[in-house]
Length: 359
Length: 188
Picture (spheres, each protein chain N blue to C red):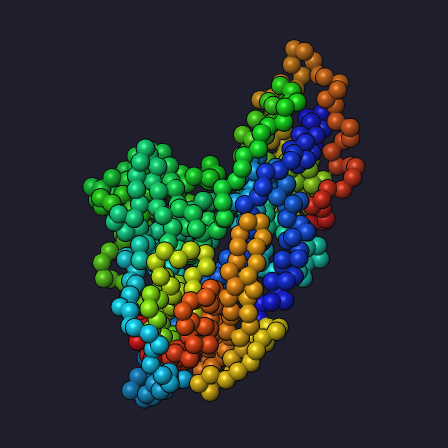
């Protein structure tokens, strides 16, 4: 009888007149694309880095690195902006057995570490001073990570945790979450670290051993934008980590304040995969700096209340790399082709990669 | 490069979204969280679309993504969050709920996520033990034990046969596991 009542209850609930949804197929597509590229950064770039590290020992002093591929033919089309250098703010000094830092997302206000181990992916989020606010046991951190969301991260502090190195620490639960908990730690007044390991002991140990300061290696870019546009600076980057090297496989240019879901320019570079650019339909082929590229429009659309701006995507394969450039909205003088024309490609040898995204 | 993939995905989701949303609502017992769950599940489906599109039963594949995401859901600092356009409009509860139904609603909502997922798969999606195990990625024995635990919990917390006795008018028209197929159907 209980089973019957359950079936009836579920039917009744499923037949309720639902409220308007805020889920969106368009948003899922955009987010899915970004995640696929992020996965590509992790799965493709990391082996390159690993192999390169081994090769570097064997070949040092024997082979000189090749000249950069496809240098820009013109200067930048606009006034130079200060090229923001985003740095990872801390490195793990200890991780659970079998776990390793694999990727990071770095924004002006936060660093997000992806750590993979036996329990899958875990995150350690480091928020810079002043970015989060604490009111009435609710910790609110505005989002500036376009890879995941436009909504702020809100954590309800549920109680005190043992202090770490004399600093206050708290257990917390993210709003909208399940009965599982995340842990929030106040590392210094105004600075917050949130860790999500299944074990609270691991959370504590990982955070206790974080090494802050300029201990993280600089991010190395697989390509460099040689032209600059007014108001177009580095917003955030996604990088893989392997053998002591951070390699940016995706970085986004825009101006602070742009809707994080649709930044003006997104550049993705990864190791070449056969046929990466072959699937596009309706694309226009052309040659830029001696490299064949395909450009196709991304029409504006709207689905379930989310407006997707018009844009264009460029795809090219050169120097053992696949390059994809997404330009999501009209921006003065910026097209996928103009960005590519001012992109210096460094090839697959990490020795040639630059620490500056804009040269 | 991705136009064909996007078109296929959009076409599929445009058709299936309502039924997936209802399933998410049953799992979450809340439309707002259901939309969050659905958004995450759709994104994961997009990421794995080539595998989903090649599955024997794409509906079962997508349903498994949704249910597993619900069970494993961890609202972490950043990885689980999604892009949302606006906040949802809350809906009012049906006006004709009986006390027992309200009790059952509350009891179901209070179940641990995995147990609730098992009940939804068994008694809403009409999956047998093996199919539910496949959807959740666990053993049939786990499904049996989780079902038993959930039903025991519900029996303990719901006065379905209280001092007034059962109301014949509340008896379901059909037993679970039979009748018309659900919208999100298919063998796992």
